[in-house]
Image (cartoon, rainbow, N blue to C red; front, side):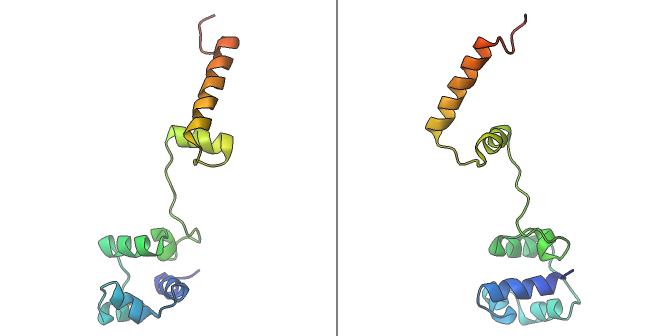
Length: 116
């Protein structure tokens, strides 16, 4: 499995940059990047957060601990229902309101949620 510098180098190439130029553009010193290249250090804390945000990847991916590139996203209950029913959380408000009316109708029709 890849390590941090392998992933950093790969992501830099995807941006059309080499590691040194992109690193310095992001505000990292050449000695910091050299430490990463020589595998004597890896970023942590705020540095890791900045890199993950810039590359839009998870920390585990960037550190070589996972092959899942995107960070895991946490969904609230409404988002989970939208994804389960529509396959996306991007549901127009009008469609969501119509679904709520249909659910209310079915609950009344079948006495769902009422004491029998």
